Each structure stands twice: as C-alpha cells, then as structure tokens.
Image 1 (cartoon, rainbow, N blue to C red):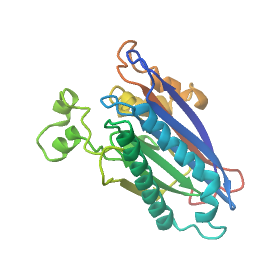
Image 2 (spheres, one colour; image 1 turned 135 degrees about the vertical axis):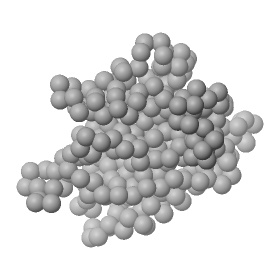
Image 3 (cartoon, rainbow, N blue to C red; image 1 turned 30 degrees about the horizontal axis):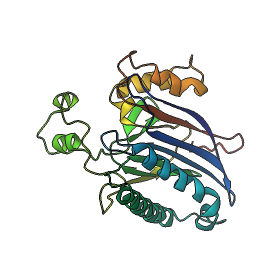
Image 4 (cartoon, rainbow, N blue to C red; image 1 turned 45 degrees about the horizontal axis):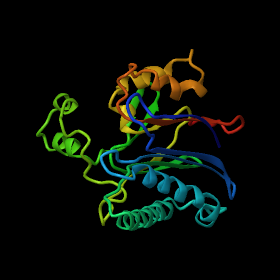
Length: 264
C-alpha cells in the first residue's frame, strides 16, 4: 500500500486580475483501499464565467468522494473499467450542467479538466482540453495526456513542428472543453503505479513555460523538500512572464513499510 505525498500550488499569475483555475486534492481509505483524487480545472479565459465552470467541476467531483465512491469502490477487487465509465458519465453530467449554466447567463462558457484518480497500485486519468498530467518514473518524465487543441492537432498531423508550435498565434484555441460542446470527448489513460512514481497535474499556465526537462530536474532535486516542489516549479517561471494563472498538484507514491516486495 502506498503513502501519497502531495504538494500543490495555485496563483493568479503576473497579469490576470482573477484566478479562474480550481484545484482539488483528496486522499484516504475507502472500503479498505487507499484512494487519491487530484484535479486541475482551468477556466477558459477567452470565455466569460470560466471561474464558475472550473469551480463547478471541482465541487461536483469533491461531492462524489463521500456520496458515490463507497458504492463503486468495493471492499474486494476494484473494477477499474467500472470506475472509468463512472467518470465518463459524471463528466458528461457536469458538461450538461455547464451548458445549462451558459444558456442561463446567455454566454459561451468553458473549462479544461485534468483528473488523476488512483486506487491502490492503479491510476486512471481523464483529460479534457490542454491541461496535462505528467509522470516522472526514475529519471524520465512522460506526458500521459494528449492536448485537445488546434495547435496539438496541427503537430499531430505534421502541419507544424514542435518548435513552430511554441510561437503559434492560436496556441490557446481548444478543440474540446467542458461546457462548450454538446458532446464531450474525454481522453482516458489507465496504468499501474510503481514505488517512487511522481505525478504532476497542471494547467497550461505552467507547462507552456516550464519544460519537461526542467520539471524532471526540480522533481529530482533532493535539496528541495517535497512539500515545496509545486512552489519550486512555479518559481521556474521568470517574473512577469506568467501571463496566465498557474496551478499544479504534485503527488509522490511510496510504499509503506511492510508492503515492500521483491518486484518493487
């Protein structure tokens, strides 16, 4: 069984007047299983009411911890497919609620969401938009999500190089977000956790300005206590360059004493 160490940070950035990001970090025991739920939702600044939609996402997902998780996380074997499908249905419900809110206020609304759910030695990721989840395993850092954005589509299609994408004028145009589209397309990834794994859940306000190499360097730096890792990553952004809100959650998984096995 793993201990989950958490470091998180969110701030307004250097230019914005409001913080439209919302974050959530919860961990604990449910029916004998050690569970974690970590979310970064980035309200779309180009649309009105981004803050309200990101708050809606986090509020709904926070409520299910006590209300729904004890029902879908059984005391015996955990059914990951069932949990994954549950999150899809829940995100559809949240999307419909956000669409109704947008209709009520006569405005287009939207937010990204990156969700990391862990139970025992397994993880499930749900992603909408261009917030991201990274995994640092050993010396390598791997992006576990795919951006749903115009620039990402152009890179995947070979119409732009990664270097050209850095200066693309329509870099912030999303092809999917919560509250804007009638039919939500959710990116899903599932996998197993290993001892020492570190996950980073973050918005584009961080990953647009802090390279994967720099992330790996900060996460590996033993002179920085883990509780300060998120703040240290934020400080990698040069003062005045944070033109967007900056939010991130860093989670480290370590086997509890007595649970270490030869495989680990």
